[in-house]
Length: 103
View (tube, rainbow, N blue to C red):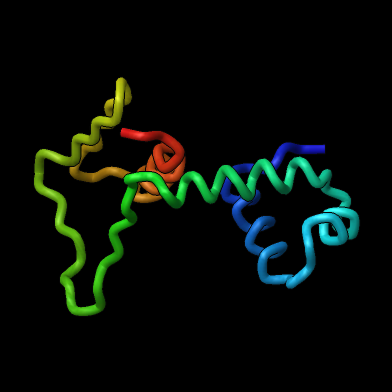
């Protein structure tokens, strides 16, 4: 069986939380060990308490404009340089991975 991604685990936890069921019956129904559900619940709870703040564009704002020099991101020892014509999907994947780090 293939391993779930972080994004998939986030959806699993959200499904459990919105189901109204307690962990044990829900995990039995979906054949996921209770300890696994607890681990990911705690992981996302800790993550939501981190200093990372997701920025969302307000409807009145203009779309993001990237300068001709591109974007430079640094978190711990991780550096990401994006050219002015970068792939937005690649940036989204990088941000998803970085959300789990404390910069």
